[in-house]
Length: 270
Image (cartoon, rainbow, N blue to C red; front, side, top):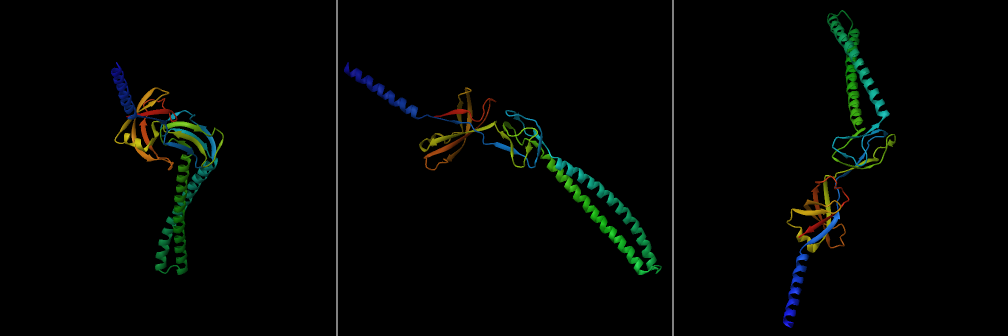
């Protein structure tokens, strides 16, 4: 009877060791979901917010018009530049007609001078007049080009007053309202990429082997009761050099629109 009892105790002990070893082979870690692609939107120019087309919590697509800034100074500059172009073109056409007429007159006076029917000084005066008109015509042509370049630059800058999304994302913060003054460089909106997400796990050096050679891991988002596959992207040194641990970066593309940065997720590695 005593032998049977000892044998039973031995079996329990062995099973306990086996169970402990099996449990030690798996590793469960947890972390918060983050987005590495978060953008702050600001204006290049000063101006009052004329219209805001989005709200916090809106999911927007690339190219979406987010807000419009009213800049009377730039609009006035555009009107003045367009007027300058019209005036420069008018001046150019007048000079061109004058030069054409002067060229015809000069050719006639040249023939008269060659026949010694006019003095050399009269001939040189007509030549000087034609050359001056030619120079003024070139100046007028450059003036048109400069004004057109300026107008092109203004139109380019006006596009920055219509601020659009450079990528898909979620509006997570709005720092300004319609009618308020937007100053150059001041953050107006914050957009976060919520489709491509990451997890950073703090892993002891002895457990790194569990992650090497694995392309994907299962993650569990407890609050939503969702299982998701995540890729092992990199093994990184810890930001704290005094701790003998490493950071394992996982990335995944969300399959459920309820998943958001900041949620708690668990990872079990066998």
